[in-house]
Every structure is written in C-alpha cells, then in structure tokens.
Amino acid sequence: MSGEPKFSVVIPTYNRLEFLKQALSSVWAQTFTNYEIIVVDDGSNDGTMQYLQSLEQRVKGVCQPNQGPGAARNRGVREARCDYVAFLDSDDLWFPWTLEIYCEVIEKHQHPSFVAGKPHCFWDERALDEVVPESTQAQAFSDYLASGDQWRWWGASSFVIRSDAFIAVNGFTEERINGEDADLALRLGVTPGFIQITAPATFGYREHAASTMKDLRRTVAGAWANIRSEQKGRYPGGLARAFERRRILTRHTRPVALNCLQEGLHREAWGLYLSSFAWNVWLGRIRYLAGFPALAVATEMRRTLTSKTRRRS
Image (cartoon, rainbow, N blue to C red):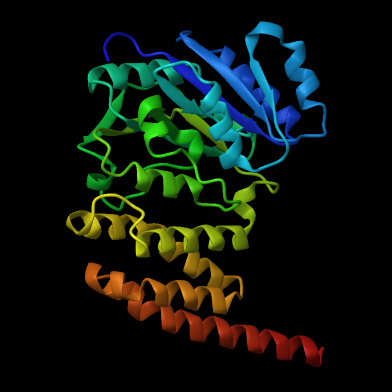
C-alpha cells in the first residue's frame, strides 16, 4: 500500500438522533476530506433513518434490525470501500484535525494495521472549547501485544484499523457485551504495526447516563468473554506471547473486579479475581492480589453496617 490513505468513517447508532447529528457535523468539519461516511442505524425508532435519507449523497445510511454495536460496526465495514476504517460512536465527536492527524501518522509509520487515538472526556460540551491543536506525538510498536499494559485506547471511537487487517480477524464480536473493543484489540495482537497517538486529542468521549458503559453487568459479561477467549486459546501469539496478552488482559479485568466490589456484586467480583489469579501471580501483581480480599471484607462490613443502621431507623 502506498500513497495517501482514504478513510471509511463507520458510525453505528441506536436511538441517538440528536447526538448523531453532532457526530456527523464533527466529521463534516474535518480539514482532511478524503473519506466516506457510513452510518448503520441499528433498529432505531426515533427518526434516524428518515434523517439519514434527507442527507442524500453526504452519508451512506444502512438500516438493520437491532443487533448491537458490534454487529452494526461489522455491517458498516462490509459497506466500506477505503484503505482504513475509522470508527466513531454516535455519542462521541471528532475535532477538525482528527483525520488529518490519522493520515499523518499512517503515512509516517508505513501504513500500520492499527492506530489508537487519544480521548478528551467530557460531560458538558463547553469543555470541548479547551481542546486545542498540538504537534503530533505518537508511540510506535511492532504490534499491539508489544505495547504493554498501559491504557492505550478508550473505546471503539479511538480505533482506526486497516480494512484488510479488520477483515482478517473477522471484526468485532457480535455478543451484546461491553469490552468488545478489548477483544478486537487482542485479536489484532500480532498484526504488524500498532500506533498510539498521545497528542493531540483526536476525539471527544462523551460521558452520559445513557452510555452502555454504565451497565456494569454488561461490562462483567465482557470481561468474562475475554478471559474465556484467552483460556481457550482464541487470541493469537501462542505461548511465546502469553505473558504480553495476560498483562494486557488483566489490566482490563482488575478494575472491573474492583468496581463490582464497590457496587456490592461480590460473587461477580470474586469470580473475576479467582479466574485471573494465576495470571496475576505470574505477572507479580502482589498489591492487587493482597489488596482485593482486604477490600472485599471492608466493603462487606460497610454494607452490613449500613443495612443495620437503616433497619434501626
């Protein structure tokens, strides 16, 4: 592959018409214009498809029965025609320089398979005014597994993936779980070329009450799906790359287990802790291994005390 990359922008959406309009406006505001937009309406009933039809040639709108975000993204890629697929969730936003930065990084690093953008998290859109252009900075790795266990992306909106690499690993899982992005990253694990952009911010990650990431049980289901995939040898790299895979995987499962404790889901928390116990021993995560049981006891005592106080009052 040579020359300037072209992008298929894939936006899945479900009953988020007002957010979708803002997401599309942020794409249309790009300084880099060699792209197509594909919006997959995943069974909305809020007028999304009618709105897309009103846009005529500006957007390719595709409608399907509700199947979840993974299936919607995969459908969008099947409609894509460009070198790279850039994912944007309909409740997130791009900055005017986003595709220009992606293009710059891709050309500089000889068309890598996988690029992760940088988020700017926001609740209030006024917070986006503080985001300004910066000189491009990025870290390059031979592949994703070589990138270590730092938090290197923030949801599918940070993903830019070479189309052939995406197709080769069969895209996103279509299970209705949170963590489908972590699963895809691990399945791309040994595909050559992974780049993490560290400056500037490339997308606005909207935090809001209706976000699917607020569904802890769905997040737990995703963590279990990823653990089982590793246990069954579904991720690439074999024994030679097991340390790297598990270092990344436990980086994602540990906070889920701790969050379950805080929310009173003790059974789920202990299940995740025990399922990855041997991996954390191997990785030397002693602080987590020792701290989890102590935190479990403390949270259970606090819940018991709170319950007794409520009964007395």
